[in-house]
Length: 141
Image 1 (spheres, rainbow, N blue to C red):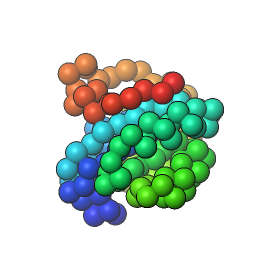
Image 2 (cartoon, one colour; image 1 turned 120 degrees about the horizontal axis):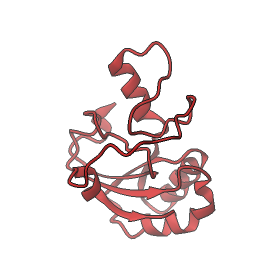
Image 3 (cartoon, rainbow, N blue to C red; image 1 turned 135 degrees about the horizontal axis):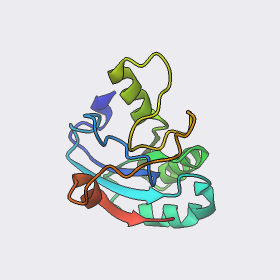
Image 4 (cartoon, helix red, strand yellow; image 1 turned 90 degrees about the vertical axis):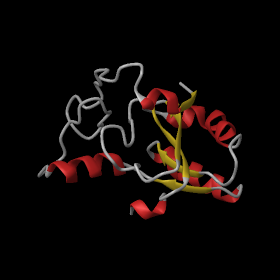
C-alpha cells in the first residue's frame, strides 16, 4: 500500500484533528507532505472552498483525502479536473491499530477517532516545533 505514495509529493486533505501519519511511519517514504486542515465534521459545508484550495496545487501532487463522505465526492471532482486523488478513509487509524495489535478499535492519543467513545475529544500533544505544523498550508474551518 505504501508504494502508492512512494517518492511522491502528497497533499493530505483531512479533518483538523485527524493528523494522518503523525506519530507513525505511514508516509515516511514520501518526497514531501503538505496539508489542508478542514472541519472534523460536516466538511461538505465548506466543499467549494476546499475544492478551490486544492486546485491551487500542481496536478502532479497526489491528493489523499480523509474527510468522511466529502472525500468521495472530492476525489471524483478532482479526478475530472486531472488530479490523482484518493479517498483514503481511516487508513491512518487502521494502520495505528494494526501496528499496536489492537483487537478492536481503540482511542489513539492526539488523533480524532470518531469510532470510539470520547474519540472526538483530542488533547493537544504536539509542540509547536513539530514538523506537522510546518506541513499545514491552509486551514478551512
